[in-house]
Image (cartoon, rainbow, N blue to C red; front, side, top):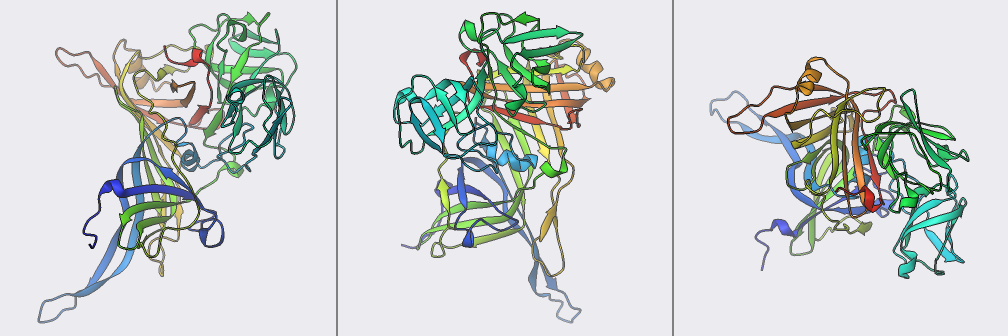
Length: 510
C-alpha cells in the first residue's frame, strides 16, 4: 500500500558538527557524529523559496511561469533543558569552546582520552592530559562493570595520565567507562577563608589553586556532605574573581554571611565543572556550523529526511516558567536545505542516542534565583526581590546570511554582536528594584538549578534594567516586570554557564 501520510511521531532530529561550513568530517561525511535531540516542537524549519514570474506587457494580460531565484534556510526547535543535553550546542551559541577539566569524553575540541584500566587502585587513561590530575582529586567514575568502581572517588596522588584512588577493584578492560575530575579535596587544615578590606578569599597552603583549570567568572561549590569536608559557617556556591597559586578571590557567594574561618581539622572539598562563556580574546572565539537532520518517516524504500547544511547557532532562549519544566528555544541560520528519499538514505556516520535525562523542574530543582545591585564591598549582595513568577534569558548572535549573484541560498553568514537579554516578573516588595531601573544601576543575576547530585549555574555578571512599571490589580499581589540588557563585565565576558557533573547532597535545593 502506498504511503499517503506521515505522523509527527515518526520523525526524529539529529545534529552533527561540521568541520567547515557545509562540510561534514570524513570522506562524504562518513566520520560525522550525529547526536539525537529531543524536540518538543519545531519553528520555521526548512526553507522559504523566492520565485519571480515574467510579467510582459501583452494583450492577453497573463503572466508567464516564474522560476526559483533564491531561498532562505533556517531551523528552530524547542526542547527541555536538562543537565547535559544542551552543552555541546551551547558552544555554538557562545561561539567558544567549553572550558573542561580532565575527562575521558570531552565535548569541546579536546581529543578524547579513554580510560585504559584500573590496576592496584590506580586509574589510568590512554593518553596524557595537558595538565596533571591534582593530588586530592575528586573523580566521578561511571560505566564500570564493578559497582564499587563507580561514583565519587577521592584520589591521593595524581599524574598526567593517572590517579590513585582508594578501594578500587582491578579492571583491565573498562569498555565504555567514563571518568572526570569534578573537584578537589584539600589536605587537612590546608584550606581557610579570609576576609580583609571587603576581599573574600579561599587560601590553601601548597600553592596549586591555579593548576585546576579554573577561570575568572567560574562558579565552584565549597563544601562536602560530611562535616569534616566543609567549613562550619561558609558552605555554598561561589563565583571566582581571580586565581593565584595560593588563593582564590570570590566576588559572589550564595550563603548569607561570608566570614573568616580556619579549616582546622577539615579536609575541605571544592567542586567544579565545565564552564562555557563568550570569549574576549579573538583567538578563542570560534564559529561552529552544524548539519541538522530531521527524519520524516518511511516512504516505500526507507527513511526520508531533510537536512539544513551550514547551520550557525543564532538565537537561544532559556525559559523559566512557573511550576513547569525548564526549556529552551534554539534557532539556526542555514546555508542550504536538502531532502533525501528513502532510496537515497540517511547520511552516514555514527549515531549517538539521547540519554533521556530527567527534566529540571522550576519548583523543587531551583537552588536560587538572585538579582542584586553590584556592591564591590560585599560578596553576598542584597536581593531586589524574593520570588519570581516567570523569567527568560536570551542569547542573540545576530547571524545574517550572505547572498551573492550566482548563489541560491547563502554562501556564508556574518555574526553581529553577542547580545544577552532577558526578562523577569517578580513579586514586588520594596521600591529598591524600581529605583535600580531609574538610576541605571549595575545589576547582576544568577540562576542556580540542582537535582540528582548535579547542577548548573546561569550567570550574567553585569546588566542594566528596563521596564519597572508596577502591575497593581485588585485582589492580587503587586507584580514587577523587568527587562534585562547585559554588557561586558570587567573580566571580559557577558554571560557564563557552569555545569557541575557532580554535587554533594548539601548543594541540592532544600
